[in-house]
Image (cartoon, rainbow, N blue to C red):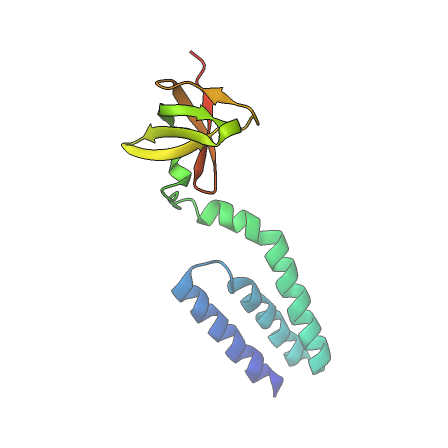
Length: 144
C-alpha cells in the first residue's frame, strides 16, 4: 500500500526538479525511490520513513556540493558581485574613520570605505574593489 505513496512522491519530486532545476528536490526523490524499494521488500512504514530521511540527508550532504560545482557553471554574477575585482576612481576622499568616500566604477557612483578602521585614500586615486558591505564598496589602494 505504501509503495504507491512512495512512487507518487518520487514522481512529484522529479517533476518539481525538472521545472525548477534548482538541485533541491532531486535528493528527496532519491530518498523516496529507496523507500519505495524498502516498501517493496516488506519493511514497515517507520523503517521506510527513516530510510527516506537518512538517504535524502546523505544524498544532500554528500553530492550537492559536487553537483552545484559542475551543473551550475553558467551562473551569472549579480550586478553588485560583478564589481568585485574591478578598478574604480576615487571621486571624493575615502575616509573610513569619518564614513566618507565616493568612487566611480563603470559609470556608476558608489559610497566606499576601506577595510582598515582609519583608512584614507585621496581623491583621483585608482582603487581595486575588494568586496561589498551593505551599500558600500570595500576598496583598497591599487599598487602602482
